[in-house]
Image (tube, rainbow, N blue to C red; front, side, top):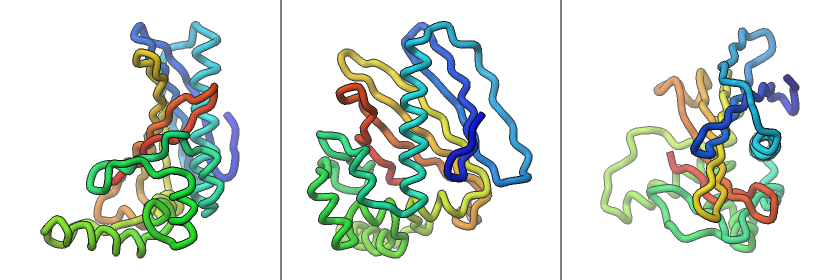
Length: 205
């Protein structure tokens, strides 16, 4: 077990017959009771390396978000761009477009770092779609992560044909931003590019 940038990680990895690779690591505040999820032992070194690589990428990625370093996210950006989940445009956002969004404080920048900006974006999106006001408040990933008392992160990877896809699921509980809903889940999708995990899709929760 190791602590890095405020996160406490414990990696427990399992390999299934379908090629699914899973790991679990947890974070809790100092002095808080922590529990671990038990999974079967690992039998393949290659699987450990692969899942550990995704775990380490997830750790660095989430730390960048919590520290509020938008341009550092470009180190994780897929060459094919990043897609926001349902409710927004489905075309990929390239590195150059994201840089411009950071400069103007709009688009995906809002989803990552700015709750007020995100609220305005969603209001405009719902008006355009002739929908009524949203019932739940809008919070950026950074605000959700920073306010959480407990963060549970699970990573898994699956090969589908020639594509190796990684999934990072963040379960956020007991934070200021989750009072009306005591837990929130964020799902990030990564793809393997030239031996490195790169961000491909972010959630619209």
